[in-house]
Length: 163
Image (cartoon, rainbow, N blue to C red; front, side):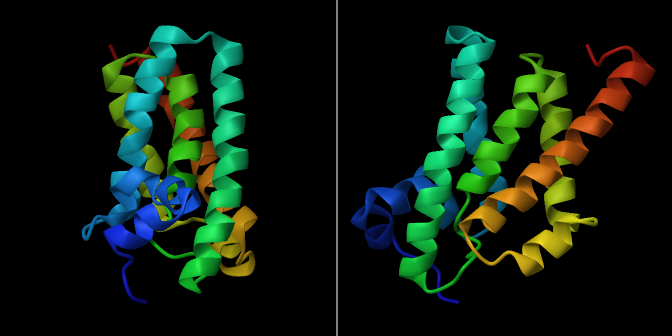
C-alpha cells in the first residue's frame, strides 16, 4: 500500500478533507496526527458555537467526511487506507463535545480515544474487518469514541473531575 503524495492530497477536494487537510500524509502515526486536527476545530467551536452549532458541525463533518472517505478510498484503490483520517477527526469531535474546554479532560480524552482506536476492542475490530466501505471507515471510530466517553465519564464521576 503506497502512501499518497502531496499531489494526491491537492488533486481533489475530497482527498484534502479525507486526509485531514494533510495530517494523513504523516509518515508516523497518521491516525494520531488526524486526531490532533480535531483540537483546533474544537477550540474554535468552544469559543464560537453553542450546543446546536457543535452538533451541526459534527453532523456536517461526518456526512461530508463519509463522502470524502469514499472518493479517496476509491481513488487510492484501498477501502480503508491509513492516510484517511477524517474518521478520527469526526469521532474525536464527539468526544471533545462532551469533554468540554478543560485541557486535562481533552488530554485524557485524546489518550482514551487513541487507545481504543488502536487496540480496537470488540466490536470495533469486527466493524473494521466487516465494513470495507466509507460508512465502516467512520463507524469503527465512532464506537471507539463511545468507549472513550464511557471511561471519561467514569473517571470524572469517580475522581470528581480532572481540574
